[in-house]
Amino acid sequence: MCGIIGYIGKDNKAIEKTISCLEKLEYRGYDSAGIAYVFNNEIKIQKSKGRIKNLKDKLQIDTKSNCAIAHTRWATHGQANEINAHPHKVGNVTIVHNGIIENYLELKNMLIDNGYKFISDTDTEVACATLDFFYNKCNKNIIKSIDEFKKIIKGSYALGIIYDDDINNLYAIKKDSPLIIGISDESYFIASDVPALLEYTNKYIILEDNEIAKLTSDKYEIYNMEKIVDKEIKTFDFKYSTQDKGNFEHFMLKEINEQPKIVYDLLKENIDNNLEDIPSLINYDRIDIIGCGSAYHTSLVAKYIFEQQVNAEINCYVASEYRYENNFFGKNSLVIFISQSGETADTLACLRKVKKQGIDTLAIVNAQGSSIAREADKVIYIKAGQEIAVATTKAYTAQITILSLLALKLSYEKNIINNFDEIKKDIDKITEIIDGVIKNIDYETIALNIYERNDIFFIGRLVDYALALEGSLKLKEISYINSCTYPAGELKHGTISLIDDKTPVISIITDESVMDKTISNIKEIIARGAKSIIVSCIDLDDDIYDYSIKIPKINPFLQPIITIIPLQLLAYNIAYKRGCDIDKPRNLAKSVTVE
Ligand code: F6R
Image (cartoon, rainbow, N blue to C red; front, side):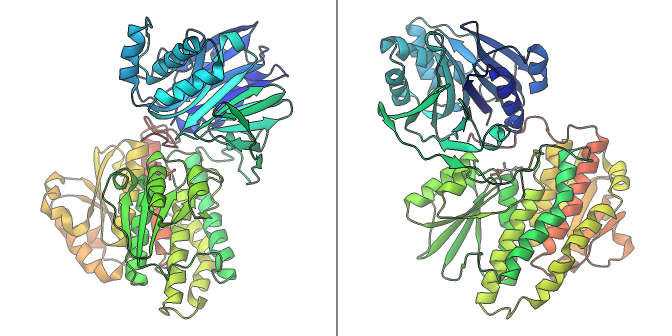
């Protein structure tokens, strides 16, 4: 993870511009932040533990500088403190780094034998010293020395580099971590993603693994094997919402409230053209879906929709496992990759692994132009707009919406449904329905009654189990309450021993085919004193709950989109009552670009 930014230009605004762009990358990690800038022909470094605002407090933002590199950190090697914060400087070389250097211990020993000393616990300081080592070894030929560095280093990296001896140039390289070059008037940027630069430019170049970028204020050169290569300049024309909370106290709440429109627009646009833009899955004999965290949870929701409504089998895999597993394919296999950021390291590694086998790939992605979107054979954008809260909400529902449309199209192609007339009626009402579930339910009172508990359980069957997993993840992420999720019938096979007097158990019941079974399980936990909270679209007897959240019943292809909303808002309200940092929970980052 980590976010990196670099700037070189003639306007002497390097500090102001890098810090402003760095703030847009804070979603990548906020353990510490730092900047290195050229001032009076010298490289100055300033670092701070915690948020970027702490760094800003230490800086004179209008200090004149024409070149800077900056970093916001999500700690991998070494604690989140000022010493381990980037930039790191060794000898002639100063760097910011995103990624993990896997052979850093081996390199560190080699460097110590060559007289280098280290002050931090980071792999980045080792990378920096390695660059300095080759810089000296290659008689200060920078391009050659970076090529030598690339040959010896193992792992993933995106690096912004400046040299004491060459302060009029900014260098950048990458391997398996994203890095783009931003092109503006008489100035150039490096950045972990394009949206970070949109205040200044939407023109960019994608740097590839084998390339080295050399940026000066009036020109850029991209080297491959010591030769300058031509690169396509791309334009980012995707509309990004402003990073502004509007009238909401948190981005998470704002993003929850954006869901009625996002879901409706996706459904309406596609249903109005009879799902022509939705790829057909009819010719595939095997469909696998890969993702991490919430993206994996959306694949489980899809599994139940495809299997229950379309009689089509789906296999779901967690990307960090799938990349090392023995994978199986059919004669005509499709692998679908789900990712909000489009940069998740494990998901990207799986995509590359599957592509090598010649299997068809489809990506369902939010971030336009991201690595997963670029590298998959086909991409469907979920059009949720930039998601800023670390805990995903609107991207999750938009992913489910697209997966439901894929299932709906297959259902039509398999003649299970003959037209879209029925679902169209529900689509026309969906904005109002989601809006009502957001606004008309008293989540605060339920939160008030359970927010001090240390454990909260979630249960459900079939699709409700998949949704329960996501509700529980939301709660854990932002409230730090321990939470377990079980298929309702599984609880008594051990875990029921954890239920004691007043343990909150949140049950989800939307699938009538298994409703009675879940109700029996709820009775079992009530008998052990649990506090029962039910989210359901069915009228239930009031002896099985302390609190009931009644949601509207809708077409089964769309029901999960409605069911997840109360779970998001319960998590939000509980975290709020506990005084947690809802948009930036501890230890998390929005984009997980390390494995
Ligand atoms: C949870 C959450 C994470 C992500 C996961 C995958 O709220 O946001 O679990 O879903 O890290 O990220 P993407 O979708 O960017 O691949």
